[in-house]
Length: 545
Image (tube, rainbow, N blue to C red; front, top):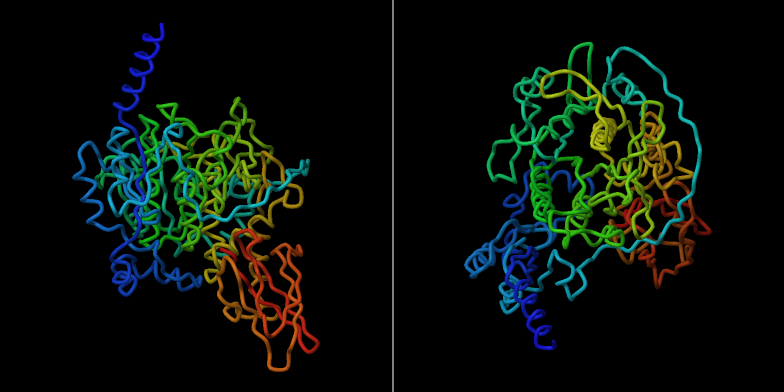
């Protein structure tokens, strides 16, 4: 009996070690780092560099491409197939047998290997992301009032619910803003009347099919075409999307026939491409929790924004000045019920779904993230949302797949109204404008934003009187310690750091000898520093990254 058991166990081990697995290989360095940072146009477009300058975001190690010699070395390894790459992670997505993958650790430039199959993973996943303290979820029953109209045809309600028609009325329809759409395919976009204005006005800037590794973006699953219609679609007297004047890149990252970890890596590649092109907004109506191989499935504890490859990349994308919007998911009335990846990302606007009366859709996924952050962030219409089909007709569809891009279009309009603000400032005012901001719930988050109010909040934020140029506090942005400037006569200062909503978070007295404040307890976001001395009172902006 013992012999039979040993043989059986040995057989199982041989099967496991003989089958192929997906993994990410992380490298130790980037040998050409100095050269690229001295010549940023080799890695980023002028528009991308300008976006960084506008938001005071320095170029860094993450912007530098992966060493081509490292990529070629792995391609030459027996039993290893390179499937995708990420400069932000300095990693390659590979597939191979377990022994072949583990053998890569012997290469001097390899830092570590992480398997998509958590059972094979013996080390914790690398993360440099800020740990956010849990937030207690409250319940609320606030009512939302909306009004009907006919100017926009069937699409009016989903726009008017967000007070989007107010921004449109004063000329903010997304012009000058660039949106990257990551999805499963965009068939008929180049044929339908609803998108003809994109080509006539040069608003369709290009794209790439990462799944098939070619430039054919008008193919594969129609889901992406439906998503695009909620923002860019336009039919006279029938339909107007939330950002009809914005410009778009279309990226296919989702393989509708399969569900594999590779799709996460393809999304990261697309996000990095969008960053290098200089896009302002990334919108994604995708989410991952289960895969064809159940060994790769995520558990709820993984939804902390710091575990999934895709979610970590989303947070990096935000740190580069991009605003990210993601559908929360459609699992609210299933046993799973929670959001997916990358809706759990720390700096992503995760969008739930409501019906035309502003009532939460039963299918809309629940939060919070596993580390207690408010998720979904906000909501828009996703039950009975109007879309434009591949046959050119207007009809309803259900899913956070549509509430997400409806919201993304409005973010573009809001940013157009004040293009000098940062993505962090946009995030804060959108949250603050929502109807459940004071009492967020586990399924609605902060509720439905009011973009007219958000525009007013931005204007208040930008008033010159209460705020001094934030570069006087340094470094800014910062993730650890900041230095406060003293005036000549000042010896001590009382420092109070408050959230954009006015909540006091840190209060400390500092001296000229030690003019620093530790901000590591703060979560990522925008804050106001109030400085008071016996002779002066002033205010600064601070971005915690």
